Amino acid sequence: MKAKLYRSVKDRKLGGVLGGLADYLNMDSSLLRIIFIVAFIGGVGSIGWIYLIWIFIVPNEGE
Image (cartoon, rainbow, N blue to C red):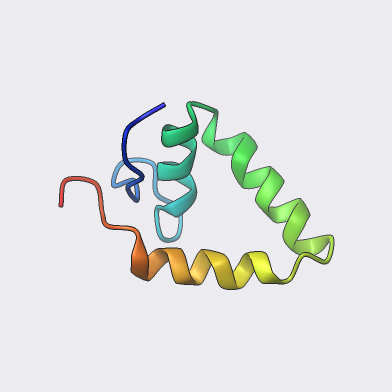
């Protein structure tokens, strides 16, 4: 596990949050994206707001 959470610059689809989180948790980013989508569709509506907030709070990798 990394020491600090960053938004990924290399593994970015939308905001880089899930790519950076997957790197932080040392797991596959595709698996984390699938879990995120299932949770979002499954009714955990706050997860979308959390993602948007993380885009503004979590710094880019290298900053």
